[in-house]
Amino acid sequence: AAAAMAQEGKAIYDKQCNVCHGAGLGGAPKRGSADDWAPRLAKGNDAIWKSVMSGLNAMPPKGTCMNCSDDELKGAITYMSKAQ
Image 1 (cartoon, helix red, strand yellow):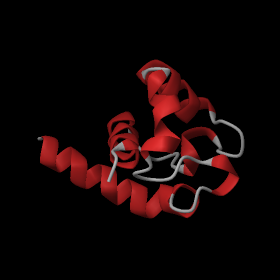
Image 2 (image 1 turned 30 degrees about the horizontal axis):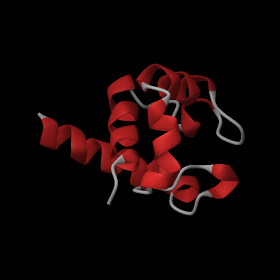
Image 3 (image 1 turned 120 degrees about the vertical axis):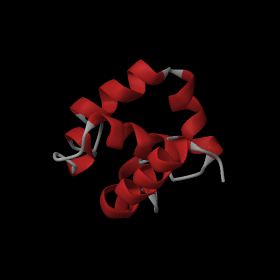
Image 4 (image 1 turned 135 degrees about the horizontal axis):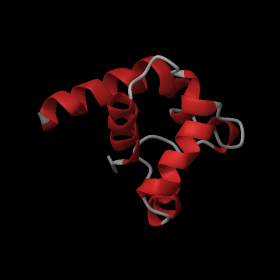
């Protein structure tokens, strides 16, 4: 189950999140950057989830993935936030 969620998270990231989170556009935390993600992760999952659902700064709600399920979005967040 964890492997499937990781694959889904990567797929959502590649399709929906990579443009901004790959390059850090608009202040987006870059995928795999511990320095970018540490202050966000320190706020806790509820704060991160609120930002995802309502949008934050240049990021629109759900990061434009309006068809993504909650589980898919959580998988993408997990994938992006893990230090590489």
